[in-house]
Image (cartoon, rainbow, N blue to C red; front, side, top):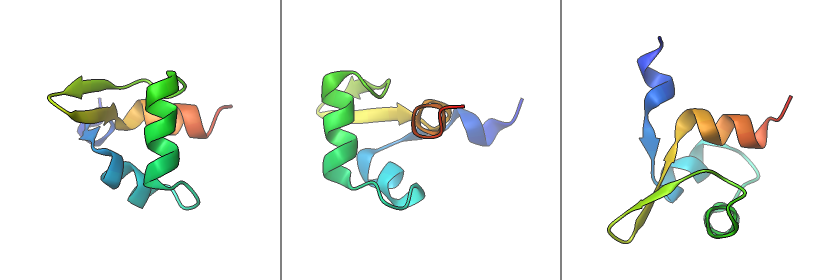
Length: 58
């Protein structure tokens, strides 16, 4: 299994990976449940694989 796909991303890191998605939009997707994530303290952590699966739905 590719280790890079199991990375956890902050909202800022996720926004840098996907052109056209702002930190605000990713945060809203987390809050509404559209993007699978979990909270560690006050930070949202997003599995990289979940980010790509959500944004690039096949």
